[in-house]
Image (cartoon, rainbow, N blue to C red; front, side, top):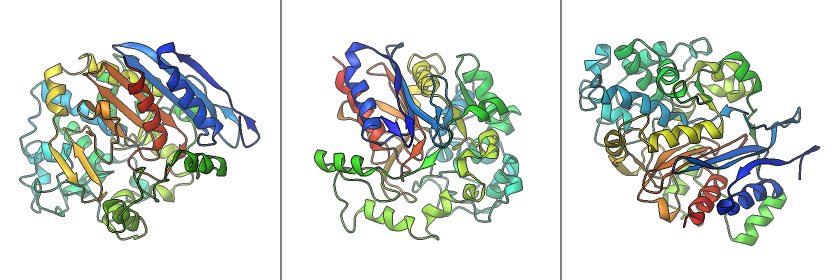
Length: 415
């Protein structure tokens, strides 16, 4: 297998019971769907899959190694939610309380009744920042949060949900700062990553940023397209969620695809400000890697992200009762920003069009997808924790076929 002029090999460990997982992982490379990627799985707390391969930088040919980190985009949201839930569990935050109880300036312009739960469940009505955020403000999270405090909600909070793709993190971060005096990244380092020895950062130090895989946009190769035709799969439209059926002309997938072409759509406004695209290299830029935006700024390895879910499932980060309550779906159905059906507990995605899950995990899986295809998933009922990271992006804010196939192979390998 090769990527450009660079030979591709895959490495790592796979328990014989999960041989199907390795077959899928390797096939993604042989079919030309991957540049570099990693996939890790824990079952009942034990590592059963830890695979990696390909190139971390397609131009330099730098190989993807066991400890290669990468920006995991919105997989970050589940980690940020967990940091908030730690404060809830300790009685420092009540999710039913208004945000303004902790952040008084937030109450203006019709937001006095916005609760912490509304923020965690994407019901706050603040999915987009109205004024363009200047580049010099990208690392000033309180300043960006102040912009949201000065806005009016786009809908009555609590009456609908719409994915707060970027603003979610600034809202969570300011709440955490007001309660603890720490940023979300500092709290995650002190309470989650550090104690559990996870290579997971919201705010990557220079040495980590330097060895991070470089994200690369790119369509599937012709060979991959031929493979899709053979298997009956259909590629998602630009921005789509990777559903297998052709979209109805007037269905939610078609509406989402149309929104991607409208620069003024709420979806593009939500995704496009702060304007990461104005930085050379976009998400690869050092500013993004070190800023630690709690909606999309986590730099991590698949092994560490799966380890985070392993610790969650085992009750080592949150009490089982806290996690069980957080997993309970609070909202579901058409998403005002993404158009597709989405479902959320307290910060965690639940199975829906935006979090495609194999049938065996539909009632029990929770986690979060990341822009371009990454995935973090936990399942208490089945004792599973898994994570997929990669650097070849797909045009999706709702996961990828590659992640779904890997998860399907994991669930299919359970006895």
